[in-house]
Structures are given as C-alpha cells and as structure tokens.
Image 1 (cartoon, rainbow, N blue to C red):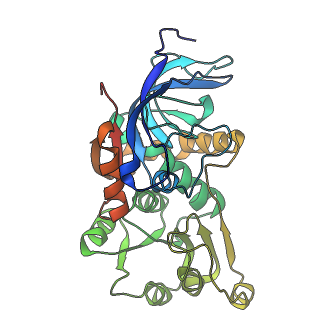
Image 2 (tube, rainbow, N blue to C red):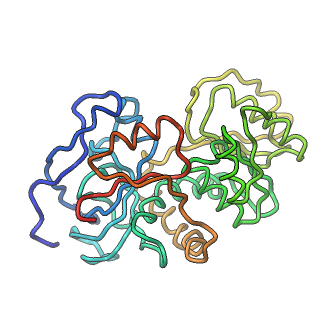
Image 3 (cartoon, rainbow, N blue to C red):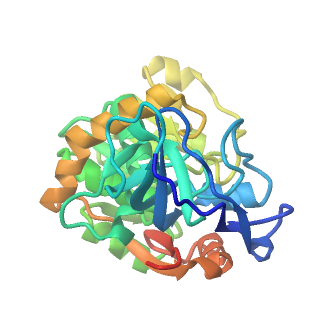
Amino acid sequence: MSTDMPELMRAVAFSEPGGPGVLKIDYVPTPVPGHGQILIRVAYAGVNRPDALQRAGAYPAPPGASPLLGLECSGHVAAVGPGVTRWQVGDAVCALLPGGGYATHAVTHESHALPVPEGVTMEEAACLPETCFTVWSNVVMRGNLRGGEKFLVHGGSSGIGTTAIQIATALGARVFATAGSAEKCDACAELGAEAINYRDSDFVAVLKAAGGADLILDMVGGSYLQRNIKALANDGRLVQIAFLESPKAEVNFTEMMTRRLTLTGSTLRPQSDVAKARIADELIRHVWPMVTSGHLRPVMDGVFDMDDAAAAHTRMESSGHIGKMVLRMPGD
C-alpha cells in the first residue's frame, strides 16, 4: 500500500436531498482501501441518472458504500489494499464504483477495475464502466441477444442507449431506438439504429411491421410496459433496467403466456462483488475488443469541472444531452 495519501480530499457532497443546487464542494476523509480493494486517484467521473436520484433522496447508497455520488471513474491506482494482485500503483484504470466517484479519490474492488483501452482518452474511459456493465449484463448475459435478432432500446440517445446501439450492432442485430427529437434520432441513426421519434411515431406499430422485437431494453416503465409486450415477437424478451415513468403498471399476462414472452430485469448497484467481477471478465473478453477496434466508442455530451457538478446534473435532468457527461477532477 502506498503512503503519502492526504487525510482529506475534495469531494462533491450534499447535506440534505434536493435539486442540483444542494451539491457543494467539501473536504472529507480520503478512503483507505481494504482487502482486495484499490484506491484510485480520480481523473474523470461519469455522471449518471442514478446520481441525480440519489441526490434527490430517491436512491440511497447500499450499506457499506460511500455516501458520495459517482458510480464510475477513470484515473490511476494510488494505493492498493491487502491481497490485491491485479494492479500496481500508477496503473491507468477505469472502474465501476459502489459510490464515491465525485471526489479526488475513490475505492473499489480490484476486480471491478478495467484497463483503459488502447486509443481511449481518460475522459472517454470514465464513460465506459457503468454503461458497459449495465448493457452487456442485461442485453447479452440476461437478454441473450444474438446476431440476426431485432433489438429495441428506449432512450437511444442516452449513455445507456448509445452504448446499447453500438454493442447490439457489433453483435449483428437489427437495432431500433426511440428518441424524442430529430437531433437525437439522427444521433441514434449515425450509430446504426433505425430511429423512431416517439413524439410523432408509434414504436409498437413500427416493430410490429418489422415482425416484432426479439429483445427490448427499457428504462421507462409505466405505460410502456404493456406497449413493450405488444411490440415483442413471439418468444421475445423484455429487460427492464429503470423506471423513468413509473414502476407500476396494469398488465394483461395472457399475452405473455400465449406468446411465450419473458419479462425480466435487473439493477446493477446492489449486486455482489462476485457478480460484478463476472461481468467485468466478460467485458474484457467481448466488449474491450469492440472498443479498441472502433466498433464501440463513448458518445460524449460534455465535460464539466468538479465545481460545476450542479450544472452537469441540471443538464442531465433537462434531458437535452446526447450521450455521456463527465466531471473533471482538479489536476486533470
């Protein structure tokens, strides 16, 4: 383990739930890596919608996790805990975090860190972990997407959406994506999707005309649930990863039974270290080659200084962004 760690570090914190304005810069104790953990000197931290939910009091950190926001980062290993074998001080990594990314230093399990892919900048690398872990585990490991199948992702211009489009396209699927403006639809189309503007087109009709979706990745919920079921092909699968509209809906399960549909879902943060390590191993084998070959590249909306975290959250909650945003830490 490296010494010379500052006792206190700069972090984006909040004392009570609320809007973006509650985010303030504070000095908090620098975390110490435990057994099997690494301490990362953060260069960039990804900004994700769960961060905004946590800030608003709707998505509390799991037991034992840092109360600070931030589920992914890029940076360099600053210290290693007992038992660490994968990394050395100074290694460049990007990592999935249980929390704490909005700070100059963050701790994670060594198996949840991945090497920064060749040809990828540190700001791009900070965009990869949360979306790649989420998309690969839900679209491929859970949803079992295969080449030649029809795949629909809602929110196609989001960080999750742009990543899902590229991964599904690289796997040989026919990809459809919904988005809410011509600009966002253009962004989806440039990545390889058949874009559907949900403000003037019915995605159910579009997918039915194409023979139905074999797999749908949804983060809307609510009224979309029954519509997704109608948009599925026989033996289709629906994977739910969030509920921007509502986690509740009235569903007629007769159609699910008669057409042999599968409805499933997951959320990443509460999963065990072992489960996340398994996903990380899959990413190294299957997704990192997509990145280095150019088939997958983070779509970036903007870079904000750490002091401007509130502005980043305001932009994210306006839904005006396309792709990912990151926070730049001091010194990078």
